[in-house]
Every structure is written in structure tokens, then in C-alpha cells.
Image (cartoon, rainbow, N blue to C red; front, side):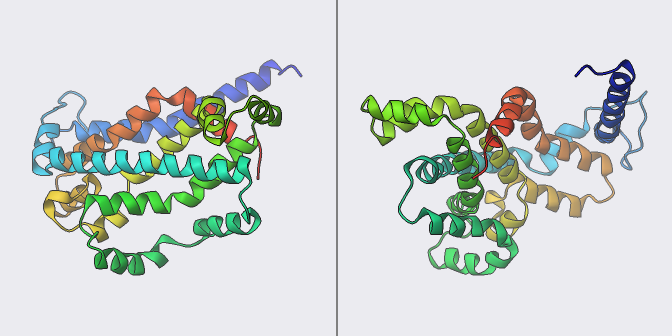
Length: 272
């Protein structure tokens, strides 16, 4: 069906309006970070980049960004392995009792994290994993299992059945079929899952605030919260620090934009 000229103009007008609604607050935030005025008053004729090195030093972002990067990268890698293997088991291999086990796994999506954090804290405290990066990696990896399993199961079940049968006829075992046959086709969906997990883990504040207490182990989001409590009147410094902390997620999305959209589409092709 051909779209009329009027409909095309209306669609573009709506998209332009939507872009303005999204980009204006972002531009305002960036200009606030460049403002030399502590109150964040925007002055386009007197922009200053001095806020960024000052905020970097005052908030100790060098160390806290390193902590966030270590925790996030390790957690995302572990999350990806768990999601791929569990999704493959439920989606292709057909594990014994999957009709009971899979709903139990999905139950993790329905339970609020706030309901689990107290018993989780005491369990990790008993084994010495509180106030440690390893503990944070395990927590983030564990809480991501339900969504990752659901996502990758849908991806694998959407793949052609004949491809799996052909691999079995050719003599491929389960691991060969996963890594050499299915994974090349599932790369966009896996990349999308990794980007989502990276965003969720990097932006985490709640768990990091509870499980980390030593200043040398704090993540960037907790450091930003502490920085905000000390510099409530320095709006420009807060904006500069926030921009530097959010930059990795924004840059990753911009770089993998096409793969992200392709992965979202392929991940939703076929429901369980």
C-alpha cells in the first residue's frame, strides 16, 4: 500500500517533534555541564570545560569508574554465558522437566529485588562476599538469569528447525551445534542482551549502595550520589559528573545502534 504525501509529511512532522522533545532536555543538560555558573545558568557566550576536570577530581571518578567498569564487564560476560547456555537448554535441547523448570526460572522476573535484598545481604555476608567486587558480579549475574533465559530461549526457538536437524544429521554434538551453527545467527540478539545488561549493571545504584561500603570499592553511581550530597548547590559540577558517568552507555549504544535494533527484532520474532 502506497503512503499518501499527506501521511508522509505527518509522519515526518511527528518524528521531528519527538526528536525535539527528546533532544532538548539532553542539550539543556549538556549546556548546564558547560556553564561556569554554579547554579547552572546557561550562557552560550561563556561556556567552560573546566567543570569536567574539577568534577572528575572532586568526585574521584577515575577510581569509581574503574570499579564500575570491572564489575560491569565481568557481570555482563557471566550473564551472557548463563543466558546462552540456559536458553539453549530450554529452547533447543528440551531438558527434562522444562515445563516445570522454565516457569520457576521466570518467577524471578515477578519477584521484586527489594524483597530479596535483605536475605541476600545476610547470605553474602556469611560467606564474606559483601563489600567486594566479586559479590557484586555474582549478584548482577544471578538476578539477570530469568530475563536472559527467557530472551535467549525465544531467540533459539525462532531459528529454523531444519537447521538444527541438519546439524544433527551431520554429526554435530550439542556444543558444536551451539557455537558453530546457532551462535553465528544469534549474535545480534546476544549483543542486544549484553548492551541491556551493561546498561542495567552500569546504572545500578540500589545494590551498590547496600553491598559496598569501602570508599575504594564504590561504583560511579554511588560516588555521584555522595558527590550530590556534598555539592547540592554546584549544579554545573553535578551535570558534568553525570555526563561523564553516562557517557559509556551512550557511546556503546551509538556504536552498536544497528545491531541493537536488529537484536530486538530477532529476539521478538517468536514467543515461547
